[in-house]
Every structure is written in C-alpha cells, then in structure tokens.
Length: 561
Image (cartoon, rainbow, N blue to C red; front, side, top):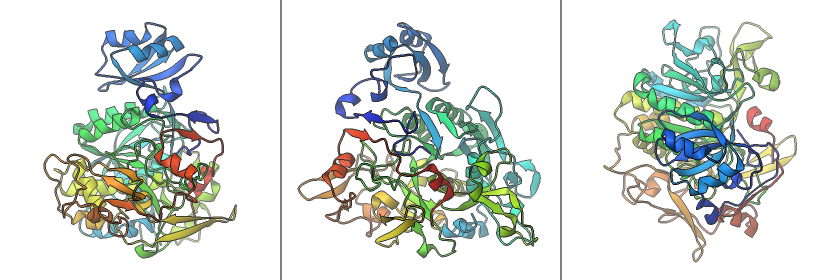
C-alpha cells in the first residue's frame, strides 16, 4: 500500500492544492499544467457513446480502453485534449491513471470466529471477490471435505496483457487465505497450530489487478470492480475486498475509485477496504491523523484498521498497531476507520509463485512452528504478513458469515451490525517502540483511530437489528466547532447513526469513544503537539505533501511488536 507521501512517482515531491476552487474543475489537481501525453481516466455523466468518446479525442490523443458497465474510459491524451475536458458537457471529472499498491493462529480467536465455526458458520455459497495480486493454487482453498475441488470459482487478469491469473507477488493469496482459507495444510494430529481464515468455505473470485511487484493502476481496479458487479448473480458475489490504496487527491465524490465502489455497494456487494499504513506519519505535524488512503475515504465502504493480537488468545490485551492510518479523511472529514481487526504478524497461505519470501525472508514461517515433525526447514505453504491490508479480509470473511446466515442482508445492514457489535473496551492509550530507530509512538483509542471498535464475529452473528426503511450506514461527516473546541458528528439525511436507541451515536461508537451528544473529540485534542500546523492540515482544504517517507513499507510487511 502506498505511503502517505508516495503517489504516482514514489518518493517524489508533490504539491496538491486541493481546495474548494480546485474541486470546481473537471480535471484533478494532478492533471493541471501537464506538458506531454498522459494516460487519463475520464468519468462521463453517463455510459459513454461513440460520439462522447470521440469528443474527448477531438483535440488529440487516443482511446485506450472502455470499461463495460461503467461511466469510465481510459485515454492517452495530449495537453490540448486535457484542457478541453473542462468545457466538455459529457465529462464529469478526469484524473490521471494513478498508481496503486497493495497495502492467523491468534487472530481468529481474537475476533471470536472460532465460536462461529462451532455453530456451523463457514460462509458456504457466498462469493468473496479478492481484488489484489491474484490467488495462487493452494490446498487451503479447497472445498471443505473435497480436496480436489477448488473454491476459487472464477479468475481474470486485469494487471497486464497476459491471461495469467496466478499470484506472482504473493499478497493476494495471503489476503484470500485470511478471508477464506480452511487451514487444510496445517490441520491434523501432528499440528500445533492451524491457520484458518474467517469464512472457511466461502467461494473466492480472483480478480488480479496488481503485477509481480504489487503495483497497478486505477483503471485496473475499476475494471475489476465492474466485472464483479456483472458477475454478482453468477457467483453470488456479496463481498469485495480491496487491500490496496493510494493517496487521496480529491473529494471521494469525484475520485474514480470511490465512485466505482459506490456502484458496487449499491449493486448489493459489501465493500471492505484497508485503511492504510501511515499512522506513524508526522511529516505534517498531525501525529498520523488524516492519513486514511483512497478508496478507504469513501463513506459507503467498510474501512478497516489494524490491531495487534499480541500472540495470545485474550482479546483484552490486544493493542492498536501504531502504523494503522487514522482519520478523519482528507478534505471530506469522514469519520474513519469504521472498525479494527487483527492485522499484525498474521500467518496465512503462501503463493508458490510469489516474490514475497525472497523480498522479506524474515517473514518466512518455519515448519517446526506449526508441525511436530522435527523439520528445520521453511514452510512452503504459509507466510507471515502485517498491515491494514491483512486486517481488511478479516472483516470480509465476517461479512460472508453474516450473509450466509441471512442472504437478505443489505451491505448497509452488514456494516451497521459489524460496527454496533464491535468491542469498545480499550485503554486510553498504548505505546509502541521501534527497536530499529528507538522511536516510540503513542496511540490514543479515539474515534479516528479505532472507529466503532474491535471486530467481534460472534456478536455480529447474534445481532438481529434491521436498518429503518430508506436509511443507510454511511460513515458520518465530522466537523470542528471552534466556539466549543470540539469535533462533532454531523448526522446526514437518512443516516442510521442518529439519536435513537438502536443505532444511536453512543451505541455504535461507545461512551468511551464518544464524548457528549454527537461530540467525538473534546478539549483533549491530540493533533500531534497541538500545533496549528497539524490542525490546519487536518481541517483545512490546502494540503502540502512532503518529500520524506516516514517509515519503510517493510515495517508494515514485517509487523510491529
């Protein structure tokens, strides 16, 4: 997953002025003042006709790709054609084809999934679309009780011009295993640990959008999203997992990734997204706040932060990972993440074709860790990863269990039940220290760090609340109130997080997180060192992205003690 200061060119200095004036234009801030041909993703006002497509290339450039079932098309355009977009009545908004990257032995008991299994909840028949680097062949994806029948029921490659749907990087296989692995290769009398996912009999839809280096683009992901929508009825795709992300550049109301995912949500697919791994980023004096990545900034989707299970079966000692990105979201000030789940040192299936073992040799799993055979070798079947990318599929698996129990559930009801039933018992703060840099990071358990709380699968399965007719579970907008020096939830029209008993603000987020009526942050505001610089970044409209990378991607891959 991209770091906060990394976008299309990793490590490059970027200055994005994303104020109100920029949002009135039809071209994004990073498309203005271009000097050469550029790959441009155009959102039309409706499904584009040939005439509409031709109107874009009238001043130079070519059509590269149309995305069936969507309002998007990809072009390679000259500066003149890009400039002409602002006056094209058929165009809603245009952006570059931005780069995007990827972002369990103790984890399952931590979220009470093992109790759900005891009562027969396995996600059987529910399709989970994994939009990632592919899903490799692995015995843990076999149908329960039928080792020769794979639960990967559909595969397609959007990452390159080939038809190869294998996982050449290794991230997607791991993510799929966390969501739906059944632990076949770590089960038996000789095993000391079994590495199961959450929905151990759900079907998997493999939509490969990232290449062998774990990199892709907006157009790849959007193409996969609309393929999942088209195949929803064929494979009962009810859940979609995106453990990937990039920098927020504009409002979610314009961002092409967010708009595509809203279409999936409205089509009846629960969309789960990683929050990002920039919670340690203090380059803008925000102490890691305001670092949620796109498309996790969209209010429809379920955005997930990462907890550390602390290598125990006891939930009460678990702690937030200091690298887990915090809200509110840039520009729109949406309350995110929605909830948190285990995402640190999680062991799950290893892709036999992936690069990760050679890239991160410290993450390999010894066979002796989980099998009593006296072997001193490295496991060919399992690998250890960390990050919000790994926390997200925990929630995707949980969503599949809820839908298996009641197929009539809407995405909004699934989201609301998961948030309401999440555990809300946290300490006021915890400290994590980096042994390499000797730097310590303090995490506070507020709304913008842990959301509605810690995923509890069994509690969610036992909840029967139903959303009022016509309402939705969109994550609320927050605003800073200067006279009272507080941050408050702004309840929108037909939003369930109101003042009623069933879906009230205090019920969903808990009294330890919400202070007073609709107040989510009082005078104990912790924007870094409470500097005006950090405050203005979070609540302002002009955002400067620095040139320093606060920590390496290896940290989120290798985990935090």
